[in-house]
Length: 410
Length: 106
Ligand SMILES: Cc1cc2nc3c(=O)[nH]c(=O)nc-3n(C[C@H](O)[C@H](O)[C@H](O)COP(=O)(O)OP(=O)(O)OC[C@H]3O[C@@H](n4cnc5c(N)ncnc54)[C@H](O)[C@@H]3O)c2cc1C
Ligand code: FES
Image (cartoon, each protein chain N blue to C red):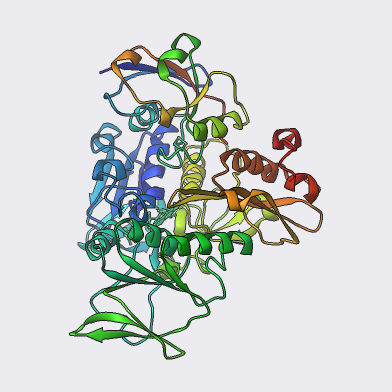
């Protein structure tokens, strides 16, 4: 007897929750089962380092959809449940309670986990990470006025937490291994601007700093010792040194993984019945010679959720998007678009001293590859279109705020 | 609860009741209405909740702030009645509001 068609989504995060919604929007009539390890229905992570951490958002604002949504859309939630194995030949997954469930198509949306430190003391109480709501609650509890927070890693999450922690009155030190903050993900102009902004808000930033160990006192983290011997006293330590894809499930099932589950532009893995979406994937980038990359952003999670849902429902693939994301720190709204892989020239438009500007990154042929906008939403919107068009623009024209970007988007 | 009509680009209409204080964007997303992506969850950072407000209702939806104005005026399909749905709060005065979605949000 044939089974009714059923889609199983492993991972009930931003990507998994979005995929379930798109499947219904695109007309999938069969069953949808959303299996999530966390106790909560899908929620948004961006506020965890921003409004939520500062106590400015309610739980219902975090939720990706209201509680009644899933029942109304006939989406079965299996929360607090892990997918522990995939039997590709039988088209079956195994769940944490030992039961099995058949699938017509399987969508892996397992996300990523915070990269752990390996130095002595890394597992002491008081050493925190920030990936999920439980982490955010633990971090919030450690942020009281006058409490000292040491943040290891000057990436976006580290800097956002630094800004939120200052708003809560905590004392903050950021420890960065590279010569500048955001070294892997932003150009030197933006790094320099943000370092100055954090310093002006009382954050101490230490660059070129290796971590030797987490210091302990009474069995709890009490500071960080650097490789040059310096010690930074702290009441809590946040480790924000990047995220690693949750690909063990796919790997164990024999699906090709290489810093992310490999997928195509339909979000399909090597197995035609298995898709993968969101932070756990490594995907081709149509605007950048189809080079493969792992993106960690909400817009990417949503785009891949659409790709998978469209492929499953037999709809045309969505138009490829320009990767982008945003960040909020103090009164600064950052909006980044594109990827600056082959930057030859960077041009600043606007005035960093006035707190509103945009950095454009161009390749050797003056093609606009990427941009970083600070309190410059119009430049972000126009710039995103320039990237999408692969526009070539003379650096002098881009840098001239007197020239309307609209006239350049054509 | 105010009744809001969302019209997809292909003409399909969706009438839903949206709680007071929610945004017009939430009304669409919470009811699985296609055509509003809302990548940023209402932070006025993405412009993927772009709608055209029926001219008869434009005055009652309020005035966009500077951030919204810059974002929406640069959307590829922007018109004079373009708004970001996440920036329109549902009030009793919006009972009957009609918004239309652009062909694509990107
Ligand atoms: C603090 C923070 C701030 C951020 N800020 C921004 C921002 O400003 N802008 C932006 O664009 N992006 C931001 N991001 C990134 C964004 O949140 C992620 O890109 C997005 O959540 C990815 O969605 P996902 O579904 O792939 O992964 P996740 O949202 O991580 O969801 C994966 C889910 O799968 C579950 N899971 C894993 N393995 C299994 C299994 N075997 N069985 C069942 N369930 C499983 C996990 O528990 C998790 O709930 C931020 C992330 C963090 C942590
Ligand atoms: S939801 Fe992102 S701007 Fe409205």
